[in-house]
Length: 343
Image 1 (cartoon, helix red, strand yellow):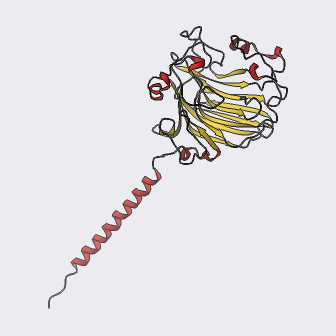
Image 2: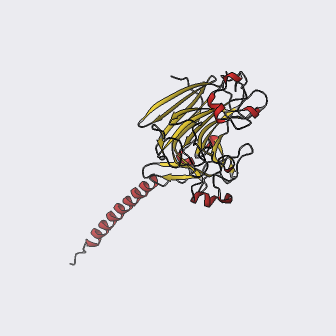
């Protein structure tokens, strides 16, 4: 009698075992790739994008930022460790009706009065500021990275957080400006500036090509830092932190003015606005009390050609990017929401 061999069954079993092992490996690899996928949209990095609208440096506007990006203006970069949202804008482009400065900047949809308040945080690094412009113009080589903006009255700005670096300096400065809510005609409006690390707004060059002394405690391009803006019951609490720098805190009332008389106008303001029509006004006693405000965050480029004499290459954005006439800011974390009781 001839016995039937069982070898084919053994081969089949081996084949099936190998098939399931390979399939399992492929599934695990697929899952791994899925988990480590490249982030494509800013809303993947900062999940609060539903609370904002945006204006880009080329005039693009949108109120739907979920799965929205635009190359060369608003997109995601990875520095080898972390995904960052990039805000980039030229010195000359299309901007808002109330400003000469271009921006790629978020604008909060929700508005609030100072008595109600709100809170904004950001962890960022400034990668580039304009390298063209006159050194004796206060706005040259600077970008605003966070704001509180009024939506009523004169539509002034109770807060602008700046980063500024002169082209021949290694370190730049972080400072914040408070713009008065001018009583009467707004032509007298002014900003009062406070240094965080480095210089304040009033430190400028001696001439268009003469630079001031480099700040010893400044921050270099590409160095990470964090700010918190917490407006609680009409009082603004600011906190700035960065590795290897002292944490700095400030308190400023948004409902009671310090600048109600001409005698209150600081010498810093008189210096900065000496040759301008504006700068000699006073503020209403209740400052921004009862007035609708909202947060802004991103890159609000201050180096427009009109005030800083920067080179804008006829408004050609590609040429501006190629020749240093732009601002670029990266954020890896940010939040916006209700105010909290200060510690």
